[in-house]
Length: 102
Image (cartoon, rainbow, N blue to C red; front, side):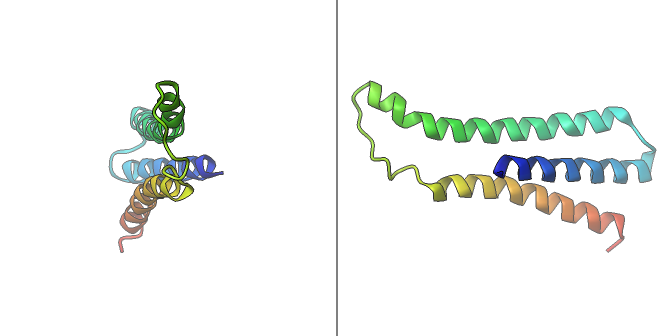
């Protein structure tokens, strides 16, 4: 669900960016694809970071370093995901202000 919402924010952000670019320079497919590439990289980095957080205890247990399960909590994961959401939401708000001349 979290990744789905992040993807939706990414799509909205990219579409608004294309709309602003169309208003200034005309439609450019290259800019659209570049926007999708940048967003995809951000999503992959977020997913990779969450994966690393989940895999660290398993790796440490294999080399006999015991780590409490309470160290990696749901709150930490929510903080990471919220940071990614905040970036896209602020970008969307800036683009909406630019579109509506606010």
